[in-house]
Length: 142
Image 1 (spheres, rainbow, N blue to C red):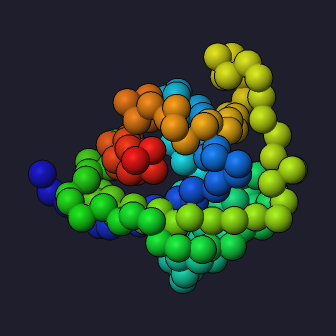
Image 2: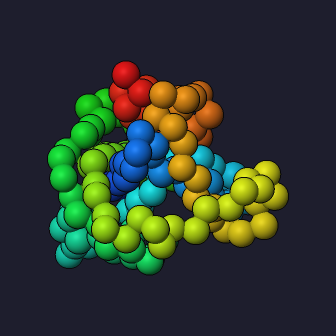
Image 3: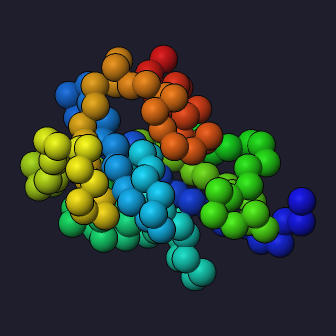
């Protein structure tokens, strides 16, 4: 393994009435289930990154409340074997939750991205695509 760079990812755990928001995405032919968020860009802070990602993906503003998790182990990117992932998860809030468009038929994957509210007690970590998200889902559930 020849790691050449860090890929810093920032995700938001948006909670509402004992539910958490998940995203189902189709990227490069790969279906994935994860938490909303994405990659930190050069010259961007962590808070600005997460706010940008939520605005791009959902059209809502979020406020970072509390750091929830940062992976402390080596995780290689599923998309680039030369990238080491550092994933940062925050609990976030929003006064714009009612603007989130949730689809009923998640199986169709017609769109690039579909959002779903899942009851925290019913989260199934094994249904998440990526290893770090599985850990975070388990921690959130417990």
